[in-house]
Length: 78
Length: 389
Image (cartoon, rainbow over all chains, first blue to last red; front, top):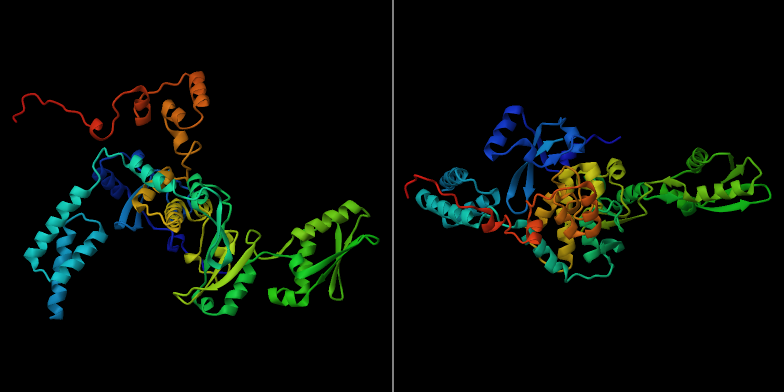
């Protein structure tokens, strides 16, 4: 059949990066918030599954923004 | 000369990287610096000044961003056509537009009234009209009536399928394949090939069974994807490649079809995008669809407002509608919910449960006549004893 393609290659899907524990800690410190205050992403979200995200981890999302060029968002996996 | 230029550009970049400016702003400043050919001192001053202006233009904490967004979308919304307005858009496909479409987007309808897909093809297929048509045929749902005539023989309890050879050739399907499909999908029948016809013999002598079988046959999808009712092949004037536009949508299946460029294939069914591509893609899709709907009506709404709406809709990891089943219905405050929709129901249910409203939000504080925690109401003055002025 077809060659398997990554969902992240789709034009509508921005880049998702799974953060390590230390990186997550750092992000929360700079933002000055608790984990639970971040926007969420479900663990059964197709892209979350693809990068193997587990509940409690933080995903860094690099969006192409029409206003800022590039913007970075974080989501907590639930 | 060229080399020196390069060095200067590196200096600009280093200078800009010291500031937390958005990359699009950085690009713009860099371009301008290059144009005026500024030396390092001037460049530093320019960047510093730009950063100051950027800071003063940032949203202030406590600013009612949501209200501004609501009003900015609401006011142009009053100018949109109220009636369901269909428009023969790209390639004669009917698309819902105007206010009905905007409501559809914000309500996250699972089945929008006019689902539509834009299918891009892989390079080796995109340049060739025949190859594009081939894929279109593979995707478009083909029913038996498109290819053949059905005749019922009540006396001998059978249905005779007489396919049209030309139509079969067009769709690239053989008699054998049709027979197999028919055999697979029907029960209580015997399927036989008689010359160039297919005879479906009902095993029980029941008139009802014969009619049921006929109905099933009519609904049988021989090739293609059931949801895709029509496919139109169009050449894109700008890129020169052939693009397929479909009526009906099934993203998951279409992305798997050979020759389809799954990376660039999209649908206007936002919920489907959410299911197949995830929450971030859904956010992008909401922004895209809302902006294009507004723009098509000749209304200019700043994209930031739409982005805020999309952020709220996707903040919980699932696509929530703006309305009583979504964002507004999940508010903690009883009064805020009652103020939105179904006032009596909300108040009654809260009373039965013995809920308490903590009066922490905006709406409920306005209702009871207290200052709200927003803008200047959000800050308090605290006197620090013993501090020097």
